[in-house]
Amino acid sequence: DLVVQEESPQETRYSVSSITPDQVGLWVRDRSIDPETQKALENILAKKNELNGIAETIAALDKEQSDIFRDQERLRGNLQRLGQTPEEAALRQRYVRQLGEQESRLAAIQTERQKAENARIPAQRQLDDLIQNLSLDRNL
Image: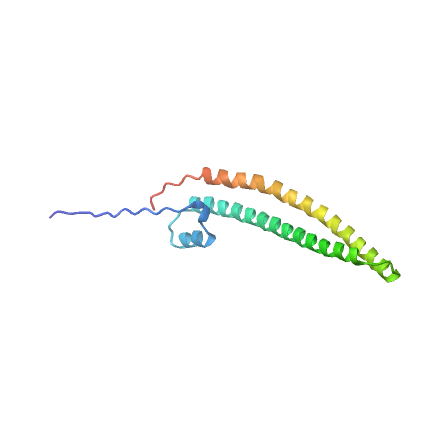
C-alpha cells in the first residue's frame, strides 16, 4: 500500500483598503480569521469609518457654503433692482441683514471646515500606519 496525501494549497489576497465590515463578519462566522486578525481589521475599519465621517462633514460644509454663495448672488441682484421707496428701503434692510447673517455663517463654516481638515490629517496618518504595520501571514 502506498499512502498518498494530496494537498491543494490555496492563496487568497485581499486589499486592506477595500475590506468591508460584512467581509470581516463573514470571515469570523466561517472561522477564517483568528481573533488577532479580526481585531486588527476592525481597528482599520473603525479608522476608515472615522475618515469617511470627516469627509462627509467636509462635503456637507462645502455644499452649504456653495448654497450660501448662490443665495448671496440672488440677494445682491435683488438689491441692485430696488428703488428708493419706503417699502423698498425696508426690503433693502432685510436683504442687508440677511447678507450679514450669511457672512457670519460663512466664517463659521470656514472654522468648522478647518477643524475637520485638521482632524482628517492625523486620522489618515493613523490609518496609513495601521495598514502599513499590519502583517498577517497565517495558515488557516
